[in-house]
Every structure is written in structure tokens, then in C-alpha cells.
Amino acid sequence: MNVSKKAVGIGLLGLLLSACDAPPPPTGFAGLGGQAAGFAQVTPGAPLVFPRDHGAHPDYRIEWWYVTANLSAADGSVFGAQWTLFRSAQAPGAEAPGWSHRTVWLGHAALTGANWQHSAQALARGGIGQAGVETQPFAAWIDDWRLDNPAPSTAHLGNLRVQARAADFSYELNLRTDRPLVLQGVQGYSQKSQQGQASWYYSQPFYQVSGQVQTPDGQWHVTGQAWLDHEWSSQPLAANQQGWDWFSLHLDDGAQVMLFRLRQQGGPDFVSGSWTDADGHSEALDSGQVQLRPMGANATLDQHRAPTQWQVRIPTHGLDIRVEAFNPDAWMKVTPPYWEGPVRITGSHAGQGYLEMTGY
Image (cartoon, rainbow, N blue to C red; front, side, top):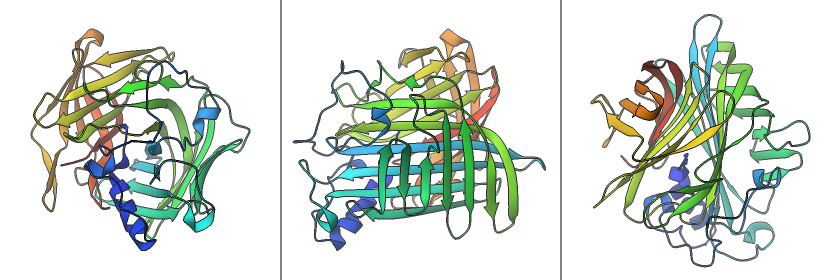
């Protein structure tokens, strides 16, 4: 999300808190629909300021930095890479030092191939340097997983390096762009429900990528495209929203499309998104402009079942496409599990992208 994006793993933070005799995280889907009393609220009108807003926002309860990349090698191998850092404040107010710090961090990383997906997670407590985010120069990290800018931070984060290493995979990727950021929703104010839930949300969808990926089968030099999301809120979901389907799509004509559907019990789904042309001009999309329809193919993990083929239509832009998983079994085997992987685009437009599905 992402909602945009994405703190499906925030429920895991309760495990770390329990070990430290702290109260469990809020109830609701992964804690995202929990109570936000005492935390800052997302209200429209306050402009985002960069590079300041690339950093952490401790007055808000939940935040994440998220990168996905569609990659290919000279031998024809195709890969998807994901890197996510979540921040969760367990209580409002000033932080205490050291192990009394009430912020918890969670990292998810994955590398996906045609017939396999390797995923990993990392947990950290705030206040001890194990995880965090800085703005000048920009750096986000948990243990040795890093997303950073080797030069002084710019407004559009035009030069980033992302790396992760786990038992079955590693990657180190360089991301470059000279395009502007995309402020999702209305100048970064991204509504998530008719009841008023919202987040601050921006993207950088224009990265060109080069780097290395490694698995037990070998190492490859790769190139491709990447997408960065940064999102923060104190209550980004309504209590009756059970999960989401989120798309980041790189079209071959240079346009970039973000779409999400928040599935709601007892009412219509909430659909939103954006269309950004090749020059970086962006237009917000609402539910009346977007049609998202699962097409029947499903991936199954234990009791979880998620659709891996979709029809996506945006008639105002002449878009009528089929979005299909590159690897239907791209489940993130974390707690709780969710589906996340690269997709192919065919139909009125061609391209590639990423799909995330949670709450199934």
C-alpha cells in the first residue's frame, strides 16, 4: 500500500512486545484499524515537505517504507524483489531511552523467481540503534538490511541503494531517477474509507535499477524498474475493512498506475488510485473511474486463498488489461501470511508491476 501498504506483519510486533512485558498491539486487521487516541491524526491541508518527510513521523502510530522491483538478467531470468520497513509506536507521547523505548520495528524482504519465493523477516526494538530512519543523508535500516542514499538527500530521492540478506537469498540494487515524486490522493492525503480513515502517502515509481541478486542456484546481474512507497497514519483502516488488493503497474508507454481496493464487510469496497504519465504528471483516480475484477485463478496457502489474475479497467485512459502473477505461489510466509509478487500486464497496454493481497 501501499495501504499502500502494508503493515500486515505488524501483528508480529506483539511477539516482541510480549517478550518485553509491554501491552500487545491494537486489535483489528494487523492493528491498522485499532484505536488511535493520543496519536496525531491525518487531516487534509498540511503540505508535505521534503526531504523532511522522507524521515520518520513518531507522532503517528504506524509508518512504512516500501520498495518493489521488477528485474531481469541477460540469460532471460526474471525476478521480483521486495524490501519493507515498518514502524509501530505502541503508545503516544515522548519516548523513553534504551530498552524502555515504545517503538517497534519490523522488516520484510523477499526475492521471487519463476518457481520459488524466498522471504524473511526481522524484528527490532527502538532506542538501541538496531533499526531506524534518518533524513540527512536518508537511511532506513533494520540490522544489515538497508535502504539508503549515499549522497545528501534530495526532494525526490533520486539515488538510492537497497540491500537485504537472508539464509536463501540476497540482493543489492541501485535505484536512479530524475523524475518528481507522486503525491497520492490529494497532495499526499490518501483517503482509505468513507468513514474518514486516511494516511499520508507518496510514491517514487520511476526508478531504473541495476544490481545483483543471489540465490543458492547462483548470482545474476540484473536491471529493471522499481517503485518506492512511504506512508504513515494512526488509523489507516476502518474496523470493518478486512484487507486490501494493491497494484503498482509500470506500463510500457512510461505511465505508472497505482490502485488499491480495501475490502469492507457490510458495505461496498473502497477503491482509489492514481495515473501518472511518462512526464510525471499525476491524476488521482476514484472508484467511479476504476474497475478491478478477480478472474478466477487462485493461489492457496493453508486456509488462505487469493486471486492471482485480475481484469483492470480505467476507461478514461483507454486501459483494459489482464494482470497475472509471474509466480502464483508468491506467498510471504510470515505471520500473518500475505501474497506479494511480480505481475505481467497484457491487453490494451503491456508492462509489469507488483501485486499485494492481504487479509485472505
